[in-house]
Amino acid sequence: MDPVFDDIYRRQLERYRRSQTVFGFGAPGVGRRLRALVMAENSIEYGLTKTGLQGALRADARLCAVINLHQLVTLPLSDPLADDSITQPELDADAVEVFRAIENRDGYISAADILRGTANSLDKLSLKSRRLWDGK
Figure (cartoon, rainbow, N blue to C red):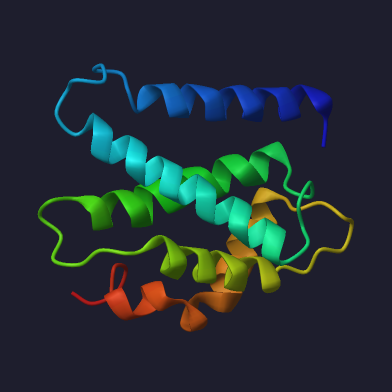
């Protein structure tokens, strides 16, 4: 990856993390957003460790994984209106499935690899049973 874009993606992720506290720590929902973000990031690290891929995640892939997992999974499932939730072990197991499905050809994982791995493992994920993304 071009070092300039590596730096850009790293800074984008830092800005995204900070944006979750934009209204301050006492604002309604900030604690929930931060817990959901930590949960997403922890599961990514768990999946990388369990599959032996630590250090392989490029900055674009980390940004893609964190934002998508946070915005599409942990944040909605932590919403008070949700009639379902997810545990860290369930999320960790799903992260392992996604990373196992990635064909790591060049020793690094890109954002495109994250998307392909997710698509290739979707039917195996415990999240699939929650019907977050299908139905009417």
